Length: 125
Image (cartoon, rainbow, N blue to C red; front, top):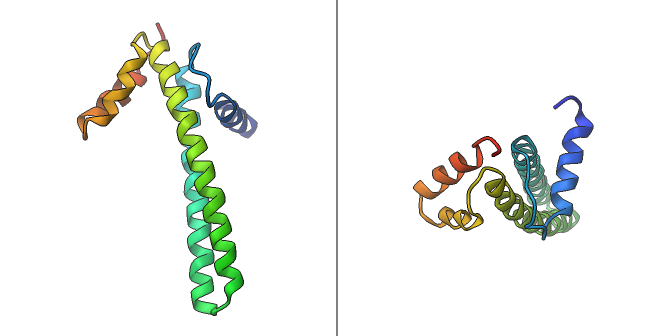
């Protein structure tokens, strides 16, 4: 990506199109969205854990309440990002020339994840 605002643009576009299963998604946009949404989810998780540990160490309830708030916001974001990732994955499969039903291959343990990654990594057709 050329600059940092492009990452935020891709993340914003991906989160806005959470229920858009029509059209196509470029390969770079899909993978940048996957990366940035994963990083945001991990940061929220780590921030909640740090606040919870601080609450236990300092024995102050305020840190625990902050940890619960961060965990709730992080969980809502993670669910939203998962739904957006599924929609983007369906569009990416369509862009790569596969039927969107191939998204269900992820239900097959280990092999399904690898097959889906390989299909989504194919160039546009």
